[in-house]
Length: 330
Ligand SMILES: [Fe+2]
Image 1 (cartoon, protein in one colour):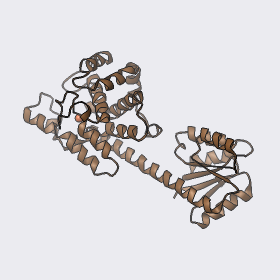
Image 2 (cartoon, helix red, strand yellow; image 1 turned 90 degrees about the vertical axis):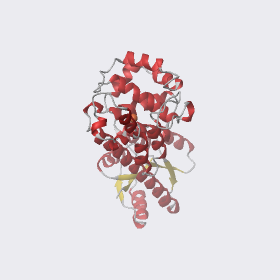
Image 3 (tube, protein in one colour; image 1 turned 60 degrees about the vertical axis):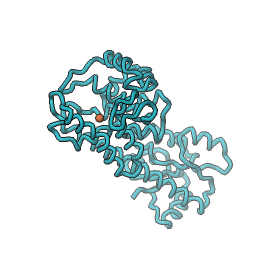
Image 4 (cartoon, rainbow, N blue to C red; image 1 turned 120 degrees about the horizontal axis):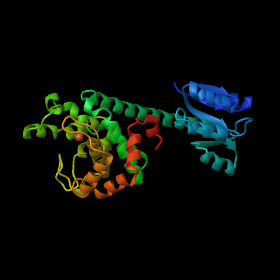
């Protein structure tokens, strides 16, 4: 069970807050300085930090900033405990990444609800991380069937995310986009190996079977609450700007923007990597192909956003896997 870490150089304050929280069933950990706080946050299951601002050595702002800069601790909510009416302290606290504030002397009626709210936030973040980890496992499981698509989904997720960054897409939408990129081909679990791994050209009937993978994948995602947008990305990632894609033959903006982004990312990665039926082309040749298909296969604005990045540099970076915790820092 995640604990509340109380950080205060004043022993009486520490013990008072600890007693109030323990009485309400919230287990606590205590630290009397900033350095001890950082050590505990890296070694224990801390669900929220109650952080005094004025302390000898590292002050509360420095501790908060350090916690928020460290990928291992940046998702733990921090409540800064400041003097009543100290506006400057709040502004500095926000700049240091504080999530909430309490004023001294701490009101017992306010302390427990604020702490519980922060613990809920931490719990939800934990659940989100679990969903990401599951998505990554699912896509790895799919790719394990086929050596040629190793890390393809991860790269698509990263290309899509970089493109979205150039388009000003942030927060929840960007996280859904990343998951959509990771899971875009998950429906291929429902396609027989004889078709999926066939080295030669597909017959019309076989291609019709392949065309079912977006819907299969969307159904898989729809089974998880909160993945509605991701399911839509998965369903629409083979639609084309000119309306000749599948499964719904949606044209231009009828295909959701996030799916149009994944479509470009997917095509770019497919072009630049070796597959059973073709050798990968260079980054430059793939960019030329995106330009040629701008306005037919692909949304022109998405192609422009993709190409506005330094594509060779982006391709080199994307070749190295992005960590889950980086994704959650959007
Ligand atoms: Fe696909």
